[in-house]
Length: 229
Image (cartoon, rainbow, N blue to C red; front, side):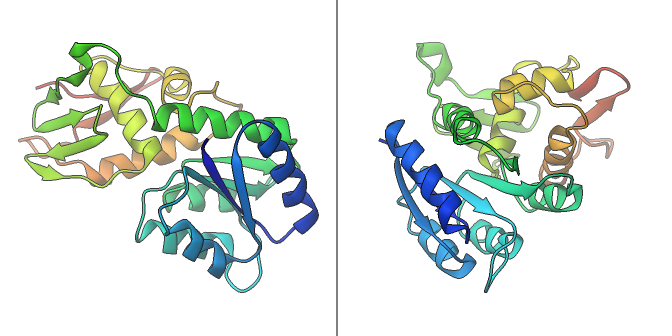
């Protein structure tokens, strides 16, 4: 049973989410302020945290920053409809995805399942146990571990998922729609900036090629490509 942490000061809304998640087989716990939420998230007891942006004592973005300083726990942000700034900042700080409020318990649960499905995916065949190598980049999918030139890289769950898709298609462009389907577990919505923000973060974390270029390139009108040297 996956443990879900709900961090939101709207007691009535969280109660509804908690009841629905419990019916769907999750073990859901709720806290109602950012400081308590960050402390609870860092206990290591949870599979995912659902984090609202607008909260007392410590807002959601600061809470996210505190959690990311000590954990790669998958985090789904709850943001106000039309508030693109909070969404982009949240993704840049390491959120895995976001859902806009108001949302239904069913929609929230579907997004949670999509994130957990990718975060907990384990290869079923022997070939999946072998590391994936592209130039100086090496991935161990079964261990969800990545290294560049032998040095470990700290990636969020979603960054890992997207990078794995690019590694498996190294040398070929991958569209944003494909990246969303394979990396986020959902179709890309209209005006969705998720992929762009996550790939920008990956660029900062990955090393450069011998000629100084980023190993992760944008291919005009086609998507993104991991350069295969």
